[in-house]
Image (cartoon, rainbow, N blue to C red; front, side):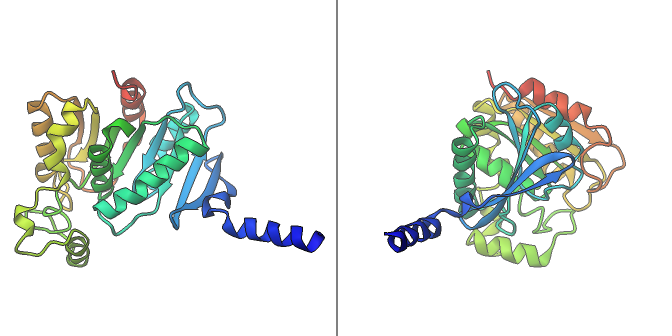
Length: 265
């Protein structure tokens, strides 16, 4: 009987989803959980005490970079989450993975069904595209020097530097070519009206001297489209600042915007 029981237990262990294998550590003084979903590295940082409603912010790229806003939200009782989907540029395949991650966090950790998506740089592609695909799962958007048009970055078709290797990757995953890319209508900028009508508030923090992801080609256009559609978008424009540094030395304006606007009316 014991060999049979041992075999059954072994079979059960092998069949467990990867998400059951959780490694615990600390990050900025808070408990950090590392696990996988759909074969992708994921993490969740837990506050000491969860705020009412179990709010959370989802960093879509570059976890840990300029973390002051995330740390402040942890202190306010928010969870901070991240899933590694790099080099997918917010394409539909990445959104499918993100949806699995969202479902897991809501189910396993009882987080709010609506997340604040935090898009730094190219992370803006993932944040806005996920919000457009799942407005009912989105509380708000915090975008920081965000890429909102692939042609601006990595394409470099405007005034920005671009990145030839990343542009090649983006074209491939979106099944585009140099000839078809100019007419592509699946950029985050193309989704501004739908997001505004869904009532999703946006905060953008940008440098007005950004020569990598130019403000005029990205967030300025989103702001104009959002205003025209009657949406709520605020911009913090940093004079003379390039693509870096991201965020703000004092993240209070970011935190206050999210605390005020994460509960959609």
